[in-house]
Length: 234
Length: 234
DNA sequence: CGTAGATTTGAGTTCTGTCAAATTTTGTGG
DNA sequence: CCACAAAATTTGACAGAACTCAAATCTACG
Image (tube, rainbow over all chains, first blue to last red; front, side, top):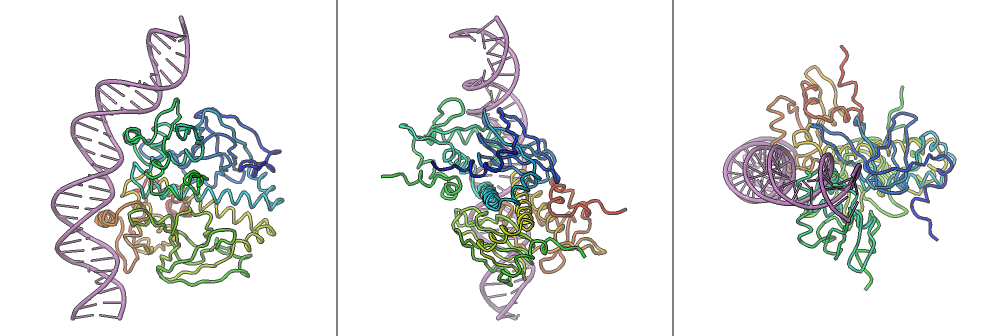
């Protein structure tokens, strides 16, 4: 059986990590400096958030299993935090000095970590392009496509996926307003792009339609590992 | 004399790099895959750009001396490119397999590269927050502050710094429209936040005023190394 | 000194934000 | 399983910021 992405980077960390099970909205503490904290996401979705002027917040990024959180890779905004978005989640907590030793001793591991960080950087930059270049509707579609590719399960009536983000979370992630997100989401539902399927769970009857409503779908698919889904077997 | 940021990561690369001198708007070729290209910025400013729907472009990020460009850390958008923004610039071109070997053999170098990439990731994320959370005026101020901190030289009449980006570049970087950027920039000039000082060169008479017009100034200062400038010696 | 490209500016339009009220959903305790 | 309170979401009316298009200037350069 193939080792998945999470296991590939977990191995050497296993002996040194503190396992933490989280529930929705739980925060992970972040420390800066030479002894900075490092997290490896193992299960569930997490959000990197930062307080902004006018008492708002921004969701700086979505973290998936296999992702690393290194404090020094987050901007030095007072109050940045990681919060759990999924009901249940698991992270491994490490100290940078420990990881540093592992990296020094194990070039193979070092390269894998570097590749993971490059991948995360690419995602952050793609998100930049989404926010900067797309309309509100396209942005919301982009998020749904991303989550559908990440967590979607094909069923007889369509692609079923989780939406653990609230309207406010979505708004903070996409540089929109919660009211506007609500309007956009309602419009998309009216168009039949998706249907509600129980508590924070959506059903997308024709994924091609959803995919077609965002111009950056090809890049999103390549980043979130769903190229196969876009070209279904005949 | 202290080694600067660029030299710190350059050393081990020196023997393997192809030096390239660029002039304004020159493009650097990017290749993907196991043999991907890697650039180290040595001199000048560069822009990472991506074509977007509706025949637009986005500036995904500004690259400064000391920064690395690794193709796999850029989003898989067809047509991403690096272009020189400064009149003169210098980059070192390398092949990933070569760098990989250096990283494997030299843990100290590996850590420095990792730290640089973490720093760049933090900047990208900060840029996200700027685009997503600030008004047009604040975004333009943020860019000026960043460039002033990076390239500014104190003079008797104020802080003198380069602005190698055109209105269109600025617009593409800040998720605005070139016309809107022009209006904002004119407004800022009228307010006395800066004054033109020759060909692509600006003079900021009172940096505190400029700094004060962007809520994220503290984070920008920490990222772009200008904490001292914000709290001038008495 | 003329031209192509860049920048500025005006007028009108559109999209998104704001505020407030209505409605639905969720969590909790009988 | 039901009732209720709190929280989240939806929706309408209106305001405001940014975009579009087009025309007028300005600049760099040959």
